[in-house]
Amino acid sequence: MNTDRFSLPAILCKPVEGTPLVRDEIKYLLGLEKKSEVELLQRVARLVRTKHFGQKVFLYGFVYFSTYCKNNCTFCHYRRDNREVARYRKNESEVVEAARNLRDSGVHLIDLTMGEDPEMFHPDFGLKRLVRLTGKIRSETGLPVMLSPGAAPEAAISEFAKAGAEWYACYQETHTESLFDKLRIGQSYKERYATKVEAKSNGMLIEEGILTGVGETLDDIADSILAMKEMKADQVRAMTFVPQKGAPLESYGAVTSNRELNVISVMRLVLPDTLIPASLDIDGLNGLQKRLLAGANVVTSIVPPGRGLAGVANSSLDIEESRRTVDSIKNVLQFIGMETATAEEYRHWVEDRMQGEGNPMQMGGASVNCRYWS
Ligand code: SAM
Ligand code: MD0
Ligand code: SF4
Image (cartoon, protein in one colour):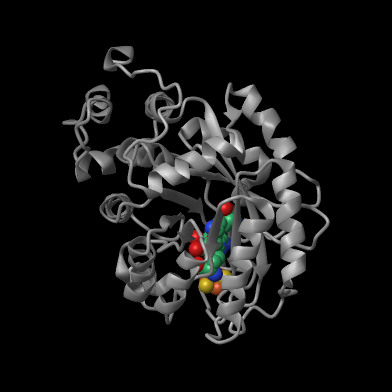
């Protein structure tokens, strides 16, 4: 790509003035490497975030309640063929207890996640259990719920919505079908995508996400960001691939999270009023600050210690050390001048968003002016 024709300050002005970035500009921003340029990108991403959310950050409790899975994703520790995993399936009261504990610690949402557990995918048994669990967690904690069950059958999705689940999260990982086929072997790109369309048409909010460091190009990522916009995703994420012992993609090796950080910033510019996670699942607590400085506004993968609960990309990192807790996070937020929102503020955001009210929050947002940097 001939980058000479791009002026960084001028491009960064566009989203601020309400002009959508085009694909080439998105790709150019994603590819920035020079320290001063990345710093400017992040600075503008933060200004845009402040405009929509002030300095408020939302906190998501994570309950990975079943680690059984019928799929064989090449990047994942919990893939079917990995015999090294000590798998578990938590019962209803264990999940309720963990969720209550998370609520008491100060999270704003409970994310109920599972592998595509064959038992839980049984239509008359497991899926009904999940529907019941959804209602139970909502009533017991009083918090909104996100379901991350994988590509659930269409009929189950409307049941999830009826049970009151506010969110359906299911990440495509990439919007390039040939790459998808290498990552999610034997799964249908279209079916996975359709679950999100179904969830949205049932009134749920949806989260879309991609992996970085799995052989994708900047073109692939630009396509993904535009796809996220097209599908009107309410929360969007990028996760740097963490190599898993014994999984086929292990040979790709670890990459830095620099690419993920650029994706966070660019998503913030393209989708200014969406929620963007800084996940503790990739680099643990040490990786939190840089993700927030890149433009994220939700901390995800908060896991209570002492309950035998795992993470996904990093199954144990920081969990039993109580470093994936609200208390640990608060120190980081304070250090960079951000603060946790209240559960009330989060609930309002969700409710307004579900009613389609464009930019619900405007949390004390300052206005942004391009003169700051051009
Ligand atoms: N089994 C369900 C599914 O796959 O949709 C729910 C689990 S989902 C929350 C797991 C997500 O974590 C994947 O979609 C992927 O984006 C991410 N992930 C899994 N393994 C990872 C790894 N090794 N490195 C980085 N991200 C990973
Ligand atoms: C996270 N480990 O937030 C979780 C997970 C599922 N909705 C989220 C990938 O990083
Ligand atoms: Fe199963 Fe989800 Fe892991 Fe794929 S990413 S192997 S569907 S748990």
